[in-house]
Length: 145
View 1 (cartoon, rainbow, N blue to C red):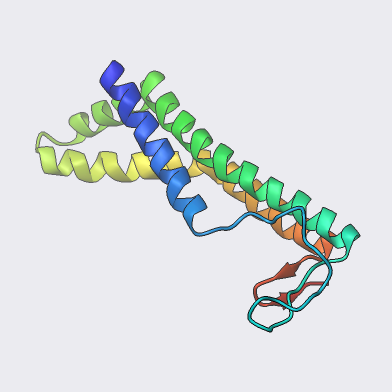
View 2: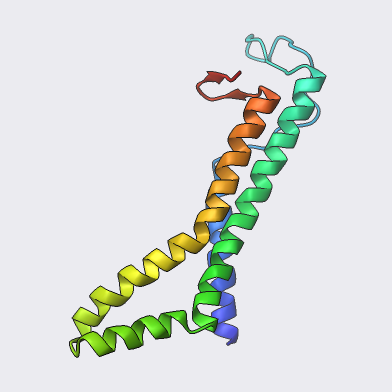
């Protein structure tokens, strides 16, 4: 049991590390537009938009932590409530061949897992886009709203 816990912790940490590695946090101490060390002009947001951008950033970071945990919880629930075992029993009743049982169990498992994790994906996608449009925060492609 300890080994399983360590593997689960390693998977969660590696997922968070990979997602966070490509992003840089928004710093709270952004100064007004000034000349940079290289001679370029640095961009800064007005205080009200900066506050909104920080709130959007925090929401995004929270979803980066909670969404994988929810997915892990769904997988544990599928095992705990013996749903996957029921899929296996169903497949054993249909065919005696192992590969055929695998062809039956794997799609059922994928459908169940993706159906149960769909709400978190919808909430994250919907709240993220609505928050961005509500805050009129800049996105990579340009301004929204």
